[in-house]
Image (cartoon, helix red, strand yellow):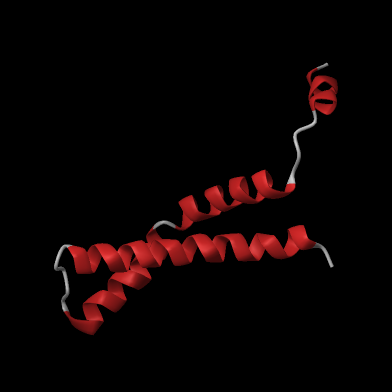
Length: 79
């Protein structure tokens, strides 16, 4: 099984979980506690609104983990 293929699902999930955690912490830190419905709405809207950022950063994170820089190939591409 291809680890890179499965990482394309795991990395955005992990980034989304971080977004949810930060959103929840900020909600509690600033006293924006408007009950369970308000917190749930904020937690759901956070990842939805940041979806383009999550997708772009997840690709960059996955590339940095699994792809290696090859100077020889870079020089061939430039030519």
